[in-house]
Image (cartoon, rainbow over all chains, first blue to last red; front, top):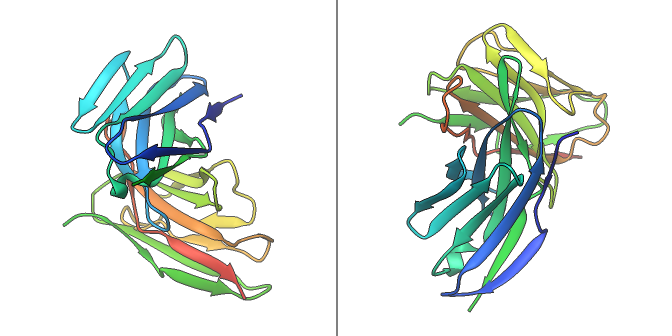
Length: 112
Length: 114
């Protein structure tokens, strides 16, 4: 089967660092995406990993370990506007199509 | 600017009624997708299309139908057979087989039952 697990909720303090974990079990792994979604809005793309290691993009970094089926999103210098849901999505290669399988999302609350 | 346009933003359905959600993109993307999102849930795939005149069922296709007569357009019909249609519907597209290119999303349609 295919499964993606993320914590349901997290709370962090403004200015701090937070790590959101994602574990997955899928067939034909072909990349992992992180999206940010504010309430009532569409998801926006944050990062992409296909090889093991860390990808850094400003205040956001994402890590992947394919052998462990594990990724995390690291948010530094948290701001109030970072309060949102963070979705982990795995691209699963199946035949001629690449579909995204989404986790249920982690709702992050940033407190003053 | 290129993007994905979904309409309407809000839609209400009566019992026994079919409703159609519009999705148009001018990104010249071949692949298009429809997702459903329930409160506190992730996105679940309803239907997807890799090329014009072809589409495939996703994980929760029952009670829905689609068409792909033009590259730019991928409308979703929520039929009366879908007994629990209240949800946030998102349309997405991406270029074909292109590595780190993410799916682009429209702003969504929120569907409710009257």
